Length: 105
Ligand SMILES: [Zn+2]
Image (cartoon, rainbow, N blue to C red; front, side):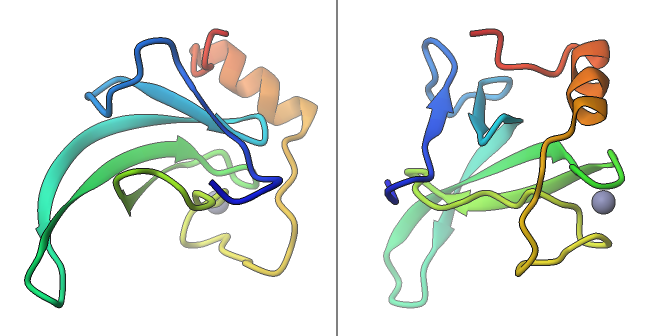
């Protein structure tokens, strides 16, 4: 786990569909996990998850190898700005509260 980038997992988190985690106040939900063959031929598992873009509030999906130990994307592909810090605004927070997309802890 990279220092200063805490991922918080919902209770009973097991990479199952519907399990949630958060990163810097942004919530993410697991869609599914799938085996994946790496370049060296070894098999790993990747997890598909989604969240809502902090800028345009659109739903976006991304993938990551298991275990999750990197920073997840904060924005959708259209808003992608890797060098610019993503900010969870009050408007974004209330959007997520309204649709029930929170970690609940
Ligand atoms: Zn966006």
